[in-house]
Image 1 (cartoon, rainbow, N blue to C red):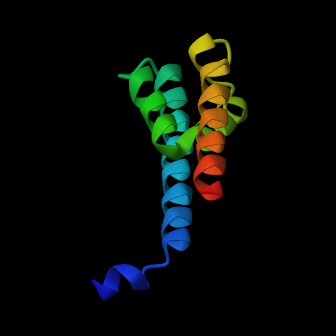
Image 2 (image 1 turned 90 degrees about the vertical axis):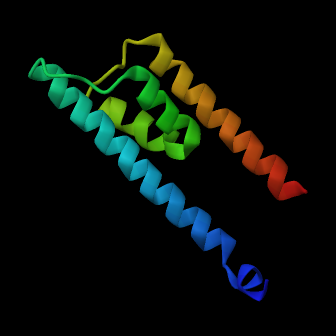
Length: 96
């Protein structure tokens, strides 16, 4: 199991967070475009699931860049709550 010990977990986590936030940001952009063209949309469940698995900053930022879902309570209140909970979890786990 030497290979597990050789993994730089911080770099791996940082790479994951960058990738998932790009996916979240792009998903919101795509959903906004689809909304304008009355095409089949990305479900709110999917967008919120992306936020829960780490894309909350990207999804939240894209809300205001694209002016998308800013009036939906699920997003205007839910995303900051998700982000705060994620930050609390990070702080708790880094203190251990």
